Image (tube, rainbow, N blue to C red; front, side, top):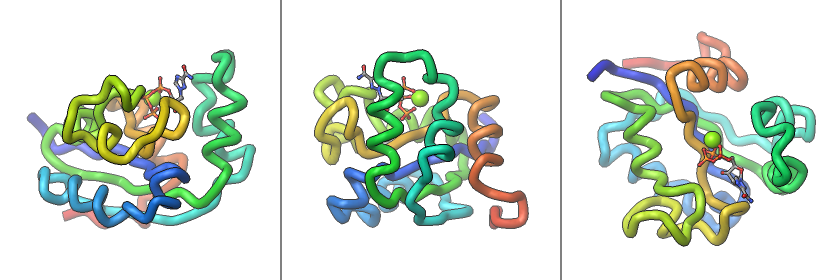
Length: 141
Ligand code: RTP
Ligand code: MG
């Protein structure tokens, strides 16, 4: 499997819970390297643009409201099979259905406040990384 990059967001609920370090530790102990990072409070326009694929979904307004409710920690993860590996570490979207030991099982409250985001495919990873980071802000191995 090739080295990939993926976009990860620690959502407002997990930042508020003070578990950024615990989540970073899961990435690092599982072979994912943090090669770019920024902490920011998203504007409504930024959150709407980021989740544009979900614009027609019934949960869109709640999702945008939640993602702008407090600061988020945004990072690029790099490593072998990074996109699938990060999704595996995150667990299912609904924390009640997430495998024990995953980030969402351990730190998330609900399907809305579910602790983390991770890109789901190479195409979306490329778009999402470019959405938040200029090439020069990414510090590869
Ligand atoms: P994410 O994009 O945040 O990594 O999560 P995901 O791929 O596991 O889930 P996705 O289908 O892309 O949905 C994006 C986010 O929208 C919220 N959601 N709510 N109420 C609902 O039925 C529902 N479905 C999705 C979740 O917060 C999900 O992470
Ligand atoms: Mg998704």
